[in-house]
Amino acid sequence: MADSLSADGVSTTRRRPTLRMVAERAGVSTATVSYVFSGRDGVSGAGVAPDTIRRVREAAEQLNYRPNRSARAMRTGRTETVQLALHMLSDPWALAVADAVNAEAKQHDLTTLILADGDWHAALDRIECDVAYLDQAPDTEPGRRHLADLVERGQRLVVFSETLEPNGFDVIRSEALPGCELAMDHLLERHVEIGCLAAESMLATGDRSRYSVYQEKMAAHGLTVDPSWVQSYTTTHASAFEAAVALLSSPRRPTAVYATTDFAAIAVINAAHMLGLRVPHDLAVTGVGNTPHAASVAPTLTTVGPTDFYARQAKVIVDRALADDTDPTRLHEFPWSLFPGGSTDLDAPGATRL
Image (cartoon, rainbow, N blue to C red):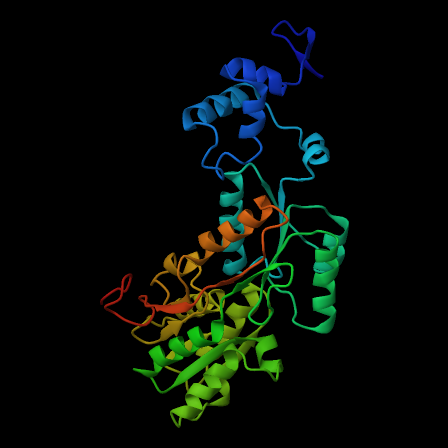
């Protein structure tokens, strides 16, 4: 029950709309309404007719009806929530993942939540959800043990990893290093003085990384790297922009920059604009990730990444949320390609001729 005021200021009592009220207004059975709001209508080919779904949703909207998720969770064992553990929310990549999953989840009446707790294992041990997506699960003994713990208690998982194999959870594999090689090859077609704006963590690791691809390609072409051509950034836009300004203010400024993420590449373009440099006339720039932001910057950003990655990955995540526990977990691979933009080529889409 909820209290409200009538037109003459008298307190009235308003009944909370029920599933039966929606059914009566839509002219269908309560079972049909329940089926529509179960999220299954978009999954089963033998579901409710589209016109009936429309009438049910219109009736629910008119009555301001919201399904009782707590009661349904007790009845079905489903929470109707998708949890996203994203380690860097300011990155366009993470924002694009969240947007795509939220759009896909809404089609099935699922709610998308983002875990703010960096300790995804502890957070998921406390929170129930139909599926959890982890964009950074380390392939280490503790990391694998944490994943096994969650699988053991029945948590559905989709993990982004270039090394883990499915083991009671789905794996999204989108290997970046071959794509990074494409980005460097693209720059090396026209440039020999190439700088690098790299994530700080990539400079510190001894493993092969997006930064080591830069080193390897420069060495393979017999090119010497000026120390001032390499700058690093942390996890913020401000850090990336500051590093980009330092890189472009070098007395021996490079004629091209390879950035290890799209958001760092966009920081380079913004820094170039501030310093009065023309992109790509004075400076060519490539990014990594093929995020939606690559098309919104001026000029458009040349980047590398998988095709239609975000929508396709979102479907994998939501399908796992809706799947039966008996459905086998799988490896989903997304190969990378080069997407030329105006930041490297005057003839590419988005480039501006002077």
